[in-house]
Length: 165
Image (cartoon, rainbow, N blue to C red; front, side, top):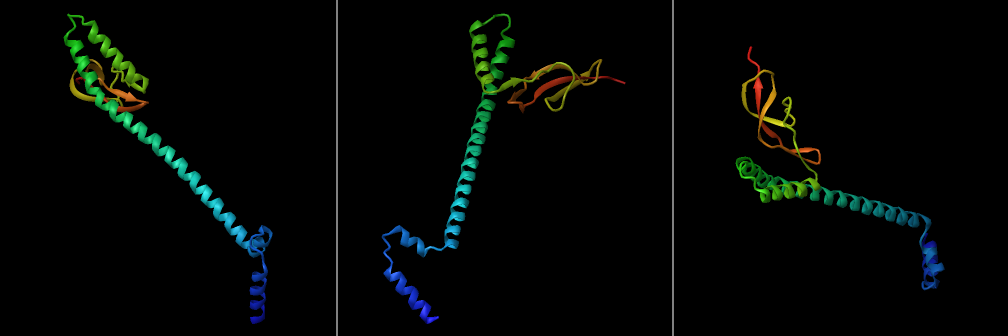
């Protein structure tokens, strides 16, 4: 054993380490394989990190758009209210501003929830019930509801009819 150790030391001292061919003799095949596996593992981890980062960026962008659109809904409500109450005096400027704002919001995926027909709890919120001819028939829209990219961000507030027995 002592003989083998001294022989290895002598071989290492005689190697010219500046020559790449000689250095490869020092690194055995197992070590090369370990380095290759480590490198492949690191590369896979890095690729997964990049994918996760891209997904997180997209989610953050969607979330920030949703928050901004939700805040702008109060502006749309104000416009709608002003246009309803100002019906006699047709204010073309206000109509134009409302339609431009709604167009911008539509371009990022906003759409209005329909409030005609039968009440649907997925899209409508009942505020008032009164006698009607048909159960769950929407009688009036109290506040508009909106969807952003097929996700309800605010249900429509409605008045529905309830058939009396």
